[in-house]
Structures are given as structure tokens and as C-alpha cells.
Length: 307
Image (cartoon, rainbow, N blue to C red; front, top):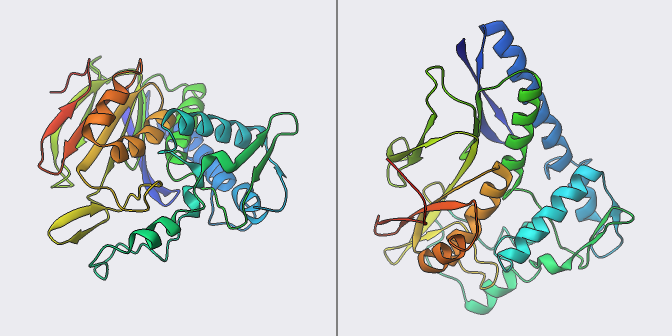
């Protein structure tokens, strides 16, 4: 058996597929199944294509409900459950954020007025995403509302790619989607997969590793996009309640059974902060997290072992 790896750009991110296969030809064929599955999901959920289901839902905001495919409906339904669980810190209608208001580049040198900031998030409210299970429709109550799958889509795609690769015969493999990773089975020598937890200060290095099998890991950090105002670092993640960028946490790593949930949980924990975030995770079975705060201090939830 050999480990076959393929790296390619999908959903605007670098995806890496690994399969322990009998030879390179078979491995590449198995990985192609995973790549095609991610392409299919991207077409369905993207906001960058006029004819996607997401854009049709957004276009009809405040006008009428839109009948959507079962797969689309089910992901929105699960996302709504996560929104409820996290008290709205995870929210598909985050796509309604006024992007022109927040521009995380060198020109952002001061925090805006509190009332203006609050106005930039006034359309974000998962409770205004109305689902009808009978007719399988999604309706955004207010004109100008938008949904987007940036906080859950890569994780969902990684789960789907894993499923089709397993159907193609991959018993041991990894799908990695720019910070969201799904690993199953074992390495060639029978040991678990080793996953590096990125150092928020040095993107290409790791400050610890985890040994995992049949688990998913998602990492969200402010090292990609941020602003420094009065010597204080502000993340590009905006708190949907205040309209202000979050501060205090440099990175969040979530470990759980599937990449969709890991992906969706990373942002809410960032917004909650260290104390509330850890307390929240410690109350849920089967999910763990690692946090790094602005002072580079490492925090871990109960029952977690890092190397």
C-alpha cells in the first residue's frame, strides 16, 4: 500500500486529498471521486455563481420562500440547530454583513462608531431564516438578507468527500480543506494520523500535534486577516451582536466526529472567548477544543491530549 496525495484549489481554498491505496493509479482514481464531489457541493452552495441555489434564496429575500433540494434544506436545518445551540454566534445570515463597512486592510486604523457598527450587522439573525419542512422551502424574512455557507461549507464538503472516497474503497485517508480536516483509518504503519496544530504567530509551523483516527479537526485563526488599532489586534471575525471585531483569541481548534460540526463550532468559540468558550464546549459530549489567546497562552477543554 502507498499513500497517494493530490492537492488542488476548490471552493476558493487549497484542498488536499490523501488515500492509502494499492498503487498510484487506483489512489488517483479514488481521490478523483472526492474532488468531483467537492465540485458538486461548491456548485450547489456557492454565492459566486448567479445560478446557485444560495443566490436564488438570497435574491428572493423579503419576497417569497424558495423551494430547495433536500441536501440544501438539510444543511440549512442543521446549521439552524447550531445557531440555536450557540445563541446565534454561528449564523448563516452572517452573509448579510455590510462588507463595505469592514475592510480589513491597512486603511482600517480606528474602530467605527458603536451605532454604525451595530447597523452593519442589523440583518444578521438566524431566527429570520424560515424553513418549511413540508414544502422544503427556505425564506429570508427581510429584504437585503443574505445567507452564506463560509462557516460550515468546507467542513460539509470534507465529510462528503470522505464518504464517496470510502465508497470508492479508501479505508484509510484524509481530506483537508484549508483548516478543516477529516481523517479516517490509519497510516501505513498502523499508527493514527498525526495532525499539526498551527502556530498562530508562525503560520508554517506547529506548536503541538494530535494523534487522531476517525475524527475531524477545524482550526480558525486571526492570523490570516486582522487589523491593529492602538497596538491591539482585532480579528476579521465580527461579533454579530455588537458589530465589532472580536479580540482576545488568536486561534481555535475544534476536534469532533465530523468536519461540518467542527467547522461550524470554531467561529462561535472565538466570539465567546476563552472562559465562556471552554465552559460551553465542556458541557457537550464528543467535542473538544484548543484555544490560544492574544498572550499566546494555550487552553484545552476537558479530556484532550496534545503532544
